[in-house]
Image (cartoon, rainbow, N blue to C red; front, side, top):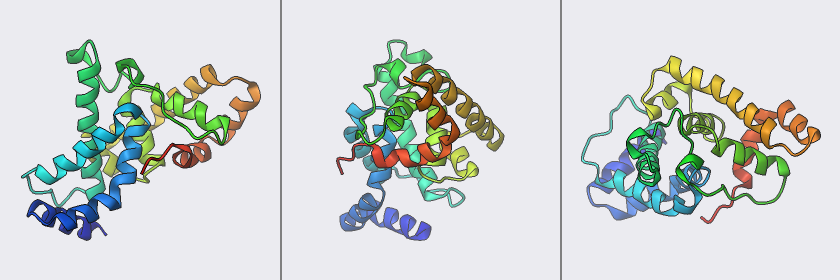
Length: 206
């Protein structure tokens, strides 16, 4: 599929709209989800902008980069431009210290299946952006550490630290947000499972 994605992208950039639509349909859910957990009110527009950027970028895709890492790298750049535009302190917006909620993003929209999902989505959105991105690419999309490194343009060692520290920050947020000891225990004992199941609880307009 990796070679096929690259082939589809090349054909799209050469003007074959049907091949572009095929690529779009293949990845739109993942890209939409990427934005809906962070900036739900702008998710649709940013998803469209990400694919337009893919189509219009004249640069040749580096053969060393996995296509999905390249795709999420473009999405992250769109996200940061959006958040910096919303932030009152645009020049100082730092994805290692500021969250989407800090920039005024609305809450992630969750289908009410389990209270754990609502609390977890809220906690994730309150993490600094790059911690949230790293955790979600790892748990939601199954990207390898080296691929997340390409997305965030940071060394592999830094990504390992982001994931480790991100889990610590997430647990701290959960302790603050959980409405009962039972809820906190449920999340704490099976945190990985709850994170991996969260995408199914997100409102999906696609």
